[in-house]
Length: 462
Image 1 (tube, one colour):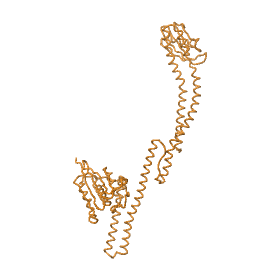
Image 2 (cartoon, one colour):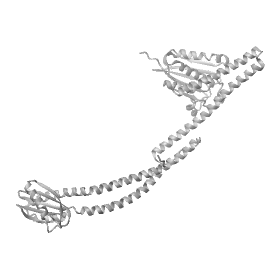
Image 3 (cartoon, helix red, strand yellow):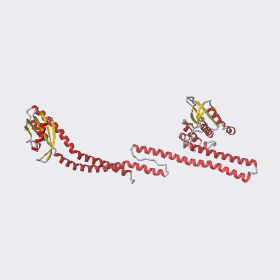
Image 4 (tube, one colour):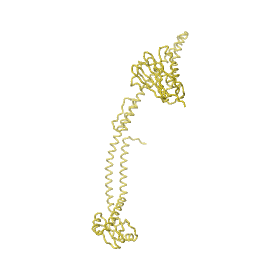
């Protein structure tokens, strides 16, 4: 298919549409004008015949019929008992009622007993078409009215020339209007296309502004501007992800290599130092393994490749078991986890909820305040339980709250106390809770702390 610009196509289609309409009007007008004209003449002559019958019955009809014949340019003849009692032959030019050509038609009608009849005949005197209408007024009394159809020929000729001229003028005007409309419609689209080319080159600082008041194009602009903002955020997150993953990989790999070289070259004979180096290698390998597992889990959830295995379980027991995993931090770094809960049965994927709670506690530990205290609270609602996990850190800015669920989103790293985990925890939490269809969120107050929460359905017995 041959390609063409939108402007040219709109211009061409509008012009062709106008041409088709005009040709259609021209064709219908000329083809149907004769039939329509004759139909109107028939309708009119029938009405005149009824009027003639009414005037005749009132008596003293000559003057009225003369005036009617002159006004309508028709011929009128009244026959009483086979004799012509009235005729307007002298008034109307070209009458053929009294001609021999229609005497047979008149006689046939009077014998037939029909109330009326109409004939389409040729006037031999002027070689023109005419209509003759006969109507029975009374016993033995008949009226015949004749009218010429000849003006239609000259009318069609005049109309044909006039319509051709009108078509040429209208087509020229339509051509100019179509060009103007196509230019007005296509210019903003061309502007958007040119701007989108910059977007395809990776320039996310552009703004789509076509300068039009067309609603659909304005909606397209808004959509593209929003898409540009999201692409910009995605690109920034992609760079952050690469930087953070690279850093998370480089650090343990460097430590693994350094400690392996020390074991090989220096400490392989010293058991204590060798064990210390090997323990460091094991810890860093575990850290790498955790990072890989988090990345794989996140990829599976985002690709909808994870199926939930929902079951009934005691949420209170799960939270207590997750708190115990941080006992080493309590002993080593004096962290405190204060938990206020109660026994309650819920219905969800137990392993996934354990992962959610672990990651939220881990996040709170990383960002809590100098008192190193984390608060976990269960709140009982009618059909669900709300889990609040609060730290006492510096808090999160309002503009950052909607982005903290993104992978490796940076929120004032200088306030982060220590790093436990991979930086993917909150993104994993978001995906797990979204898969469950559970409500979740975060609230924060500067210099007071941040609270992460989620709601989990209670188990309903049948």
